[in-house]
Length: 299
Image 1 (cartoon, rainbow, N blue to C red):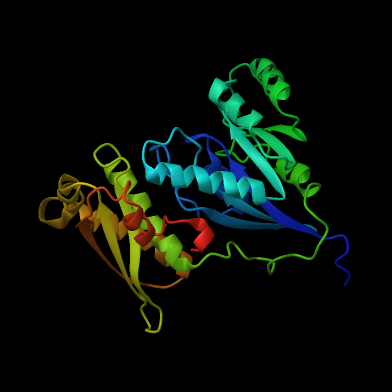
Image 2: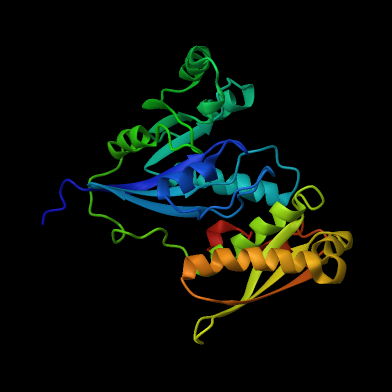
């Protein structure tokens, strides 16, 4: 069969924190592969989700929210988001239904890559006419190929988004087999699922000072063994995460294990421990050890 009319390519989801990029990715893929929480800047590592629809295959890249960086980790996250946007075949700029000055500034700084403006959370709008001045404001700062209002939580508008994006992808064979959800290793998702539960259970007490690193991932046994270290920026965070008699750590581990087992399709043995690693968010050597180093040197 000829692949001449097949289209495939990378689509970067960019935007400020908490606009719903990860929720949109999960909606498009049909599986909750990207972690979500009420905490801003939840996404750190990029998460790739693959959607095959008709003759088009989209490799969606969920990027960290662009923000005013206050430490080296924040600078790294912004660098990752901007690099992924520059290297993509198409960009989806996700915004909320307001013409926020920071969003407009971000739109004006987009690289010369075909871009679609997605106005998310339209289910919160009582008067849809309120969108008109918002769309007009964005049109003044960037020439978007299309503008698509969506509600990622309700899967409203996503079919039209895929239609618009399909035309922007290069004509080439599919990059992955149909049915593939992601090309990233399960160990990455295991770490992310643990961090998701930390945010869910302690988002008020331990907002951003947590890094999660997989130290053992052994699938050679009938029940895979996974050992994960949780690094916290302060000793006080360690006590919060462990909880009285280890109660908090048990809750986090149990919930994360359910997510990992769902992805693997079998039972796993998950072991977690907590380490106080002071100032890891601003220490270049510690950042590199935890996977947040210079991207030019590879993962």
